[in-house]
Length: 123
Image (cartoon, rainbow, N blue to C red; front, side, top):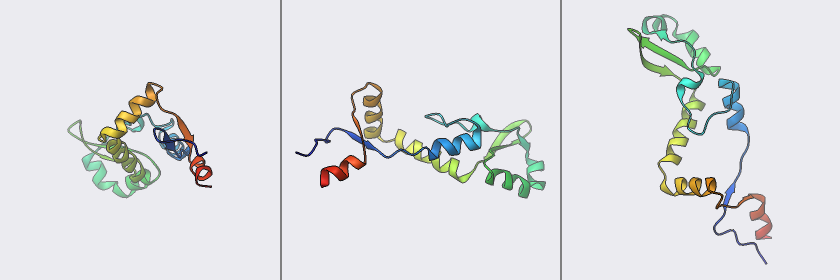
């Protein structure tokens, strides 16, 4: 008899996101990431203008750079992967069903199974 997974959540979790965050920031990304968590000192707008190729290489290497004008941060240069991760997290936070599932998980009301369990069920 096939298992009943109707109210369960299936996760395929690899450590790729945590590994990237650890590599880029020195520690795994928190549930809701903030840009400030792994940012180096701010660069002035005039310095950013003259040093843009070097700053771009640093961002490609995983650095997040704040650009300031008159001692106020006005922009950030962040790696594409970091931005995509933030957009993905925002999408989850904006999804009521996903947030409901997260709250149920935190309350211990969800049962997780590996995705391979679906293959076993189909056979």
